[in-house]
Image 1: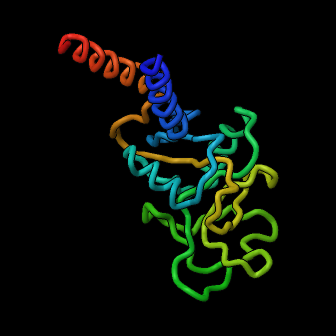
Image 2 (image 1 turned 30 degrees about the horizontal axis):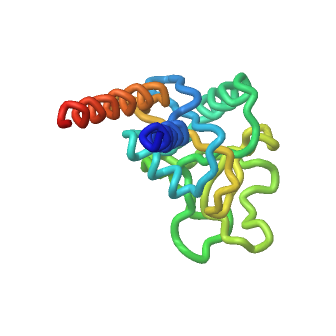
Image 3 (image 1 turned 45 degrees about the horizontal axis):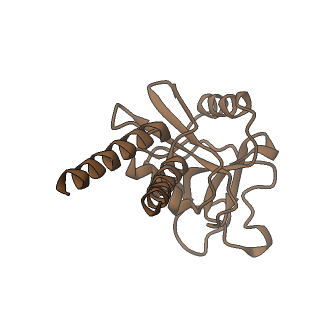
Length: 187
């Protein structure tokens, strides 16, 4: 009985971890792959860490055409909330509209700010970029908290794919099964 409980706990942890880090929507446009991770709450830094660990980075939106594409994906999947993008404000003591750069180093001259943004709301230093569903997916400057719905990541080329929860479950189940067989043979 203890073995069954332990096995259930281990599988639950592995599946929970894999599910939290997997992409819910995978799509491509103009030679770039996009992964949209939903139902995930974390800071901008945590989102970037997760994306980088899989060979991706947070998305840099550098044109109206790219913005339109992402808006159509978010709308077609009936999503809402706010999603981290790969923009951040660099430097210190800057006005809300100064110093914004993409983590990818791409040109940052294109913007799609929501009305009244960026604004350092109520004097809070908002240095991170999100796409806000309640403002037609235009951009919002945010502080680094974890009230965000998810994130949009991108990659160019073909690095390692984002693992799906089912793959992680099969892998972990197989590894645990092998470990059990080894213990049984050792008796």
